[in-house]
Image (cartoon, rainbow, N blue to C red):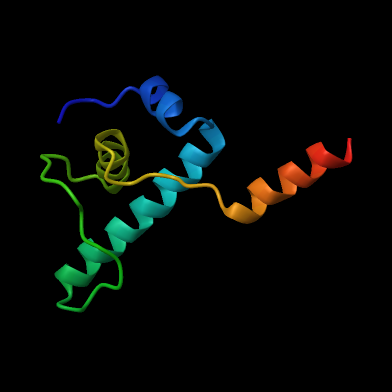
Length: 89
């Protein structure tokens, strides 16, 4: 896959801060799996979810988000809290 446009990812996730956290956490997971393979250990997170020419964990994470393999889902507690605030107004 080619370069990933950050604006497209921002539109897909909806919030640039969540995108940053999501990509950085996934990049750490990928880096951990790469190191585990290097030292013949097991990895507790999934290996990269797509085939790519890139070797950099952050680029792989962004490509996974662009392909829809990794996504963000808001918790129900946050939605319920927002509804309660709207009802109290």
